[in-house]
Length: 192
Ligand SMILES: [Zn+2]
Image (cartoon, rainbow, N blue to C red; front, side, top):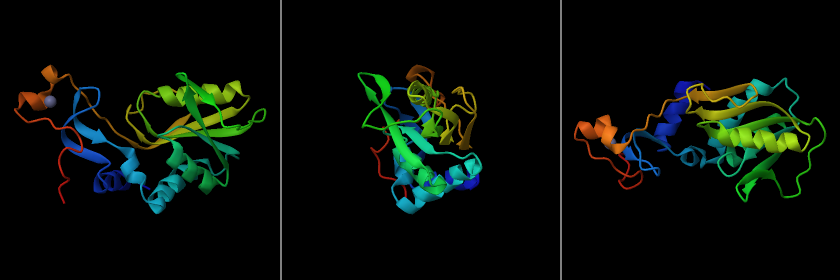
Protein backbone atom coordinates (compact mmCIF):
# COMPACT_ATOMS: atom_id res chain seq x y z
CA UNK A 1 0.00 0.00 0.00
CA UNK A 2 1.66 3.23 -1.14
CA UNK A 3 1.72 6.36 1.02
CA UNK A 4 -0.35 8.03 -1.69
CA UNK A 5 -3.10 5.40 -1.41
CA UNK A 6 -3.18 5.75 2.37
CA UNK A 7 -3.52 9.53 2.14
CA UNK A 8 -6.21 9.23 -0.51
CA UNK A 9 -8.22 6.96 1.79
CA UNK A 10 -7.71 9.35 4.71
CA UNK A 11 -9.00 12.28 2.66
CA UNK A 12 -11.95 10.33 1.28
CA UNK A 13 -13.11 9.28 4.75
CA UNK A 14 -12.60 12.72 6.29
CA UNK A 15 -9.79 11.37 8.50
CA UNK A 16 -7.50 14.01 7.02
CA UNK A 17 -8.97 17.46 6.52
CA UNK A 18 -7.19 20.33 4.84
CA UNK A 19 -8.11 23.94 5.53
CA UNK A 20 -7.68 26.08 8.63
CA UNK A 21 -8.48 24.40 11.92
CA UNK A 22 -8.55 25.15 15.62
CA UNK A 23 -7.11 22.08 17.36
CA UNK A 24 -8.23 20.96 20.82
CA UNK A 25 -4.98 22.49 22.12
CA UNK A 26 -6.13 25.90 20.82
CA UNK A 27 -3.36 25.92 18.20
CA UNK A 28 -4.21 26.47 14.54
CA UNK A 29 -3.26 24.08 11.74
CA UNK A 30 -3.83 23.70 7.98
CA UNK A 31 -4.45 19.97 8.55
CA UNK A 32 -6.62 17.96 10.89
CA UNK A 33 -6.19 14.25 11.49
CA UNK A 34 -8.80 11.93 12.97
CA UNK A 35 -7.58 8.38 12.34
CA UNK A 36 -10.70 6.71 13.71
CA UNK A 37 -12.62 7.89 10.65
CA UNK A 38 -10.27 5.97 8.34
CA UNK A 39 -10.79 2.75 10.30
CA UNK A 40 -14.59 2.67 10.59
CA UNK A 41 -15.07 -0.13 8.08
CA UNK A 42 -13.39 -3.42 9.00
CA UNK A 43 -12.19 -4.17 5.43
CA UNK A 44 -10.35 -0.83 5.42
CA UNK A 45 -8.78 -1.51 8.81
CA UNK A 46 -7.79 -4.98 7.56
CA UNK A 47 -6.09 -3.45 4.52
CA UNK A 48 -3.98 -1.13 6.69
CA UNK A 49 -3.29 -4.04 9.01
CA UNK A 50 -1.95 -6.15 6.15
CA UNK A 51 0.18 -3.27 4.88
CA UNK A 52 1.89 -2.96 8.27
CA UNK A 53 2.07 -6.72 8.81
CA UNK A 54 3.95 -7.21 5.51
CA UNK A 55 6.97 -5.53 7.07
CA UNK A 56 7.13 -8.15 9.83
CA UNK A 57 6.29 -11.37 7.98
CA UNK A 58 9.66 -12.93 8.90
CA UNK A 59 10.05 -11.55 12.43
CA UNK A 60 8.21 -14.36 14.25
CA UNK A 61 6.03 -11.84 16.06
CA UNK A 62 4.14 -13.64 18.82
CA UNK A 63 2.14 -10.70 20.07
CA UNK A 64 1.00 -7.33 18.78
CA UNK A 65 0.40 -4.74 21.50
CA UNK A 66 -1.12 -1.26 21.26
CA UNK A 67 -1.64 1.64 23.60
CA UNK A 68 -5.41 2.15 24.11
CA UNK A 69 -7.56 3.67 22.68
CA UNK A 70 -6.02 4.94 19.46
CA UNK A 71 -4.01 1.80 18.67
CA UNK A 72 -6.69 -0.81 19.33
CA UNK A 73 -8.28 -1.21 15.91
CA UNK A 74 -5.15 -1.06 13.81
CA UNK A 75 -3.24 -3.23 16.30
CA UNK A 76 -5.94 -5.87 16.17
CA UNK A 77 -5.88 -5.80 12.36
CA UNK A 78 -2.10 -6.24 12.28
CA UNK A 79 -2.32 -9.13 14.77
CA UNK A 80 -4.94 -10.82 12.65
CA UNK A 81 -2.76 -10.52 9.57
CA UNK A 82 0.32 -11.89 11.40
CA UNK A 83 -1.72 -14.61 13.08
CA UNK A 84 -0.42 -13.25 16.39
CA UNK A 85 -2.01 -12.56 19.75
CA UNK A 86 -3.30 -9.05 20.45
CA UNK A 87 -3.11 -7.24 23.79
CA UNK A 88 -3.10 -3.62 24.86
CA UNK A 89 -1.76 -1.25 27.47
CA UNK A 90 -3.80 1.49 29.09
CA UNK A 91 -3.39 4.29 31.55
CA UNK A 92 -4.00 3.70 35.23
CA UNK A 93 -3.58 6.82 37.36
CA UNK A 94 -1.68 8.35 34.45
CA UNK A 95 0.83 5.50 34.07
CA UNK A 96 0.75 3.15 31.06
CA UNK A 97 0.23 -0.40 32.32
CA UNK A 98 -0.64 -3.92 31.24
CA UNK A 99 -3.98 -4.80 32.83
CA UNK A 100 -6.98 -7.07 32.08
CA UNK A 101 -5.08 -10.16 33.24
CA UNK A 102 -2.88 -10.21 30.14
CA UNK A 103 0.24 -12.26 30.80
CA UNK A 104 3.54 -11.90 28.95
CA UNK A 105 6.17 -14.57 28.92
CA UNK A 106 9.89 -13.90 29.26
CA UNK A 107 11.30 -12.55 25.96
CA UNK A 108 7.96 -12.81 24.17
CA UNK A 109 8.44 -11.28 20.71
CA UNK A 110 6.21 -8.21 20.55
CA UNK A 111 5.39 -5.62 17.89
CA UNK A 112 3.88 -2.35 19.14
CA UNK A 113 1.32 -0.74 16.80
CA UNK A 114 -0.27 2.73 16.97
CA UNK A 115 -2.60 4.63 14.66
CA UNK A 116 -0.60 7.86 14.75
CA UNK A 117 2.82 8.61 16.18
CA UNK A 118 3.28 12.29 17.06
CA UNK A 119 6.07 12.53 19.62
CA UNK A 120 6.28 8.78 20.22
CA UNK A 121 5.39 9.29 23.87
CA UNK A 122 2.56 6.78 24.20
CA UNK A 123 4.42 4.19 22.09
CA UNK A 124 7.48 4.59 24.30
CA UNK A 125 5.39 4.20 27.45
CA UNK A 126 3.67 1.16 25.98
CA UNK A 127 7.06 -0.42 25.20
CA UNK A 128 8.30 0.26 28.74
CA UNK A 129 5.19 -1.31 30.27
CA UNK A 130 5.61 -4.44 28.14
CA UNK A 131 9.33 -4.73 28.88
CA UNK A 132 8.75 -4.34 32.62
CA UNK A 133 6.67 -7.50 32.29
CA UNK A 134 9.47 -9.37 30.53
CA UNK A 135 8.42 -8.89 26.91
CA UNK A 136 10.91 -8.21 24.12
CA UNK A 137 9.65 -5.39 21.90
CA UNK A 138 11.28 -5.83 18.48
CA UNK A 139 9.78 -2.90 16.62
CA UNK A 140 7.04 -0.29 16.50
CA UNK A 141 4.75 0.70 13.62
CA UNK A 142 2.00 3.19 12.89
CA UNK A 143 -0.23 4.15 9.98
CA UNK A 144 0.81 7.80 10.19
CA UNK A 145 4.01 9.36 11.42
CA UNK A 146 3.31 12.97 12.30
CA UNK A 147 6.87 13.51 13.50
CA UNK A 148 8.22 13.22 9.94
CA UNK A 149 10.65 10.56 11.10
CA UNK A 150 11.86 12.43 14.20
CA UNK A 151 10.14 10.41 16.95
CA UNK A 152 12.59 8.04 18.62
CA UNK A 153 10.90 5.19 20.49
CA UNK A 154 14.07 3.18 21.19
CA UNK A 155 13.28 0.35 18.75
CA UNK A 156 13.18 0.27 14.91
CA UNK A 157 10.04 1.96 13.64
CA UNK A 158 8.08 2.17 10.39
CA UNK A 159 4.99 4.11 9.27
CA UNK A 160 2.86 3.79 6.15
CA UNK A 161 2.89 7.56 5.73
CA UNK A 162 5.06 10.34 7.05
CA UNK A 163 3.07 13.52 7.36
CA UNK A 164 3.96 16.95 8.59
CA UNK A 165 1.10 18.62 10.45
CA UNK A 166 2.28 22.10 11.38
CA UNK A 167 0.55 23.97 14.19
CA UNK A 168 0.73 27.61 15.16
CA UNK A 169 -0.28 29.87 18.00
CA UNK A 170 -3.22 31.95 16.71
CA UNK A 171 -1.10 35.12 16.80
CA UNK A 172 1.62 33.44 14.66
CA UNK A 173 -0.75 31.63 12.28
CA UNK A 174 0.00 32.38 8.60
CA UNK A 175 -3.57 31.42 7.65
CA UNK A 176 -5.02 33.93 10.12
CA UNK A 177 -2.56 36.50 8.77
CA UNK A 178 -4.08 35.90 5.32
CA UNK A 179 -7.51 36.65 6.77
CA UNK A 180 -8.86 33.07 6.57
CA UNK A 181 -11.36 32.10 9.22
CA UNK A 182 -10.32 29.17 11.44
CA UNK A 183 -12.93 26.48 12.13
CA UNK A 184 -13.24 23.71 14.69
CA UNK A 185 -13.10 20.34 12.93
CA UNK A 186 -16.59 18.92 12.55
CA UNK A 187 -18.28 22.32 12.82
CA UNK A 188 -18.89 22.40 9.08
CA UNK A 189 -20.31 19.74 6.85
CA UNK A 190 -17.77 18.02 4.67
CA UNK A 191 -17.68 19.03 1.03
CA UNK A 192 -19.09 16.21 -1.08
ZN1 LIG B 1 -5.12 30.52 12.16
